[in-house]
Image (cartoon, rainbow, N blue to C red; front, side, top):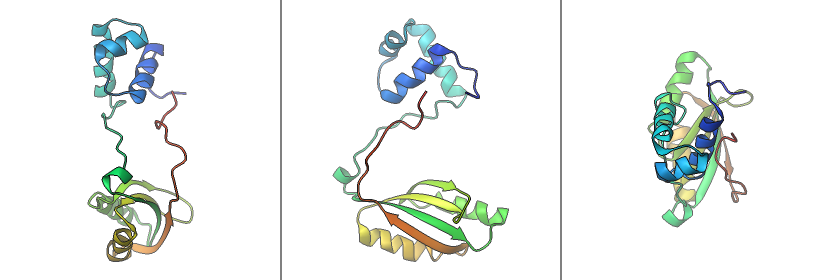
Length: 155
């Protein structure tokens, strides 16, 4: 069940934009079966409501020299709201951390990291993560290869 009030055309617009965010409004309108002006109004409404957060190019990291993808499970010393917020804020300044989630279970945060190589990643773990005043434990998982890559939402 969707939280937002979306009709079938809005859902088709979202599906098509997830597949190809670069298409023109005319092409999008043809794919979803409405004329271009109302299609553009709907897209703008989806953007203004925050349902569409932005548009991005999907880059091939290894071709750009970023050969290592890893996940770090971070346990904090104390799970106070202040410490959780402080660590979450710190992740914003770490370019190697591409995505971060606050999680429950054995860890407090899960970090998705991309690095040029193992040496750079190790330096980050030792000099940044384990040195952070709030961090108690760092467990890392190096990836072997990505086996699935699809848009985040199936609509």
